Image 1: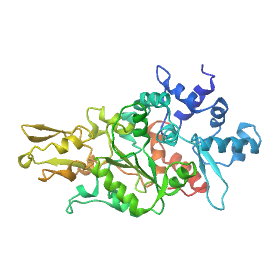
Image 2: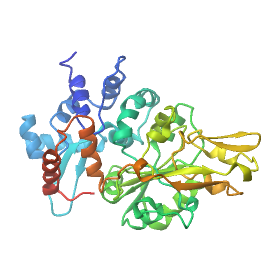
Image 3: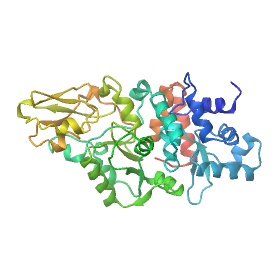
Image 4: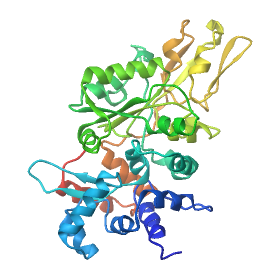
Length: 375
């Protein structure tokens, strides 16, 4: 079994930032067999986290450049690897982690068997112990929930984050599509995964989603608040995406929700504060909270701070202003990396896949920077 190409591929994917840990029942191998042919699995073993030209990969694979390029293009179109295409530069290919990565690229070709297997595997691959130390997404509040007196930094302001972008794409939410396929989940809006910049081109090139303008992106965020969805951008100050998530479908929120103290897992600068004495017991906030952090006792709101992730979804519909957001003490706020590349390097270090030294991180960053400029 150790020599099986899918076992080797699983180990290879586990060396990428997001990881691909093994399970007792082997569901992770079933997923790989559904997604990769043996030839594609073998080719993936020759790709790394560094973007490279096909001629470099061909040498490792001991294949012609022509055959290697053909295979890589087919795998890219299937959502198995990444391709970086910049005007005036050689096309580059690199390995793609499973989550967040390969899985999201299969939003257009789901089937019930694959959805069931991935649903079973998500709590393992999105391990909360790792996520607590190096989250791939962070939580920010909807702007409507932020009091004008509350300090908010530019990378915490969702409207400012969107306005800073120059290319926009909206894609279907794979989590809600997955759950609908299994006759589970909810009826919340499905087309609201926002992708920016180079990521927007990668999605569009593969036939996923559609380009939109800034105004529509902001409208989608308004609709997300109306639906009670949590805003989760990439865990970086220079964001690459914003997910609009629910606690019943979203793989990340579902996994975090199962933890007894979700507040300790997420990266968020805010937390809710309650004034039970002014609450009229309407219960709207209880229904909207995606983490079950709110309940009613004798028609008065009760807030479980261990479960609050500071999303502000409860605040925007509180008619009596009995709920508000406050900034966490600085000691309880997680650092937000400058770029998503920095996030991935930190994740590698946390998972023990990169030597925890400044030299190792600097070398990897400089190699990537020499190859390309990417957020």
